[in-house]
Image (cartoon, rainbow, N blue to C red):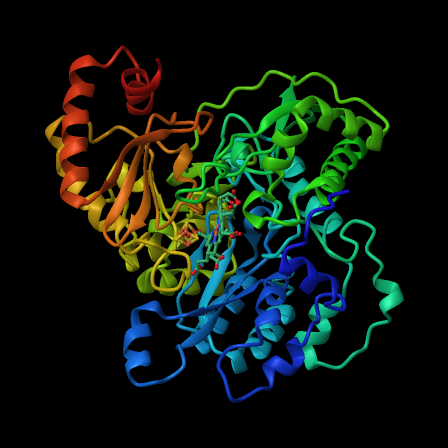
Length: 548
Ligand code: SRM
Ligand code: SF4
């Protein structure tokens, strides 16, 4: 339905023979550490990205060597839950292949970095043995479905959380190329069995993201997703989901046609059949109407704004054959993780471990490995890049406490640090303009004394940093957002609310560290002097800077 000139990636997808391309040949080409250019686009659908160590680009260029290529692999873990055994496998595979780092992402899964080309097959085969895969973790398809991660939020948690897996399965591409390419490269599947009514030959115009929020927590940032589901619980029963569409964070510096957008609530669906039908057809509309010529303008948010919400909903009703009900009332009261020990309604224990920006430190890795060997908890990733050790019985709790003491896992970090989030950025992200997770910890250390000076150190101010405007750490829904513009420089974004329901706005451009600290010092002074009762920092900066 979109007749504009197709972008080159559309042609690559169409000609890819079910996302196979020449991946098998690329993998066995020993003359280079990378893969053929077309395969670079296709490998994303298999959950991997080609990267290189940007810290070493100059040194390699001077020696006339090709870039130090390696691969990032992202697992598909709907709802972010794995078993102790699966954690053991992830641990062991990461010790053997790649850089050994484990990174918990903002979409509650795990990434391994620095995998060399010849390590990809054994890595994936190892994961498959552990019943883990990376299918559709990236690429122009539905990505990892995320869900509120804290089982204490509701006795209905498991019933609602189960939708993450259900939706992920429903929306998996039908091609079996993953098994073919990553097991042995042999063609084994009948193409006729791979017909894909949802994705057809060109897949979606762009990535598609779904989140499930379980009020009162908006730990998933539900409105930052192409499709957000908000669980409605009434009289102790799960009644269905409010549906919000058209959220997305990505923008491009200097391109005013691009912008972060919060999802728009379009209605309520009250049965499983209607919920799944509605979300499936939202995706078919995006498939058919999304922009396939300019990838900067191809996310659902732009399709929605171009079509208009009313027309979109009318098309949705035509395709589903029913109307959504009006959205139901709900309330978010929190977004941060609930750190430390908590119990659920079944008297089972949960321990939330703070993992700064999802980078699992070596001592945390050892702690988690030893714990996984005991097999007394599951492992749950949160969209705030942390980890919950879940479903621990009263008698096993003491064993975890002992390990916590043994490894010095203490709750010493400041409230600000525990409310912070940063994207990967340098040295692996090819799109980074500035540092992310390597720098925010240092900046937080410099902001902490300012907060103490103003008596604000117990405030849960959300602070997020990304190395570029793509928004992987969702900085546009933070109270203090830093968006990288160049080495050591960030746009300061202010005025977002604490619950992720209002976008922040550009306050000052291209600040360096000393300018950031001086601006914040002034703002904290003003906040302590002019704050209204119970007014959060985000609400305050919104009121004084942008409300007009
Ligand atoms: Fe992201 C691209 C890392 C969550 C918006 N993101 C990338 C790439 C793959 C760079 C690339 O295209 O080559 C980054 C890899 C860095 C590396 O070395 O690992 C990258 N994104 C991440 C992660 C790992 C950040 C983190 O520190 O946790 C997150 C992985 C999530 C996951 O498990 O799937 C991650 N990315 C997000 C989010 C947050 C979310 O989804 O809740 C967003 C904003 C929401 C959205 O999609 O609108 C996000 N990433 C982007 C974009 C901008 C898309 C757009 O609409 O313009 C890009 C660039 C692109 O797609 O062209 C991008
Ligand atoms: Fe890379 Fe930009 Fe995403 Fe950070 S926000 S990981 S710099 S694409």
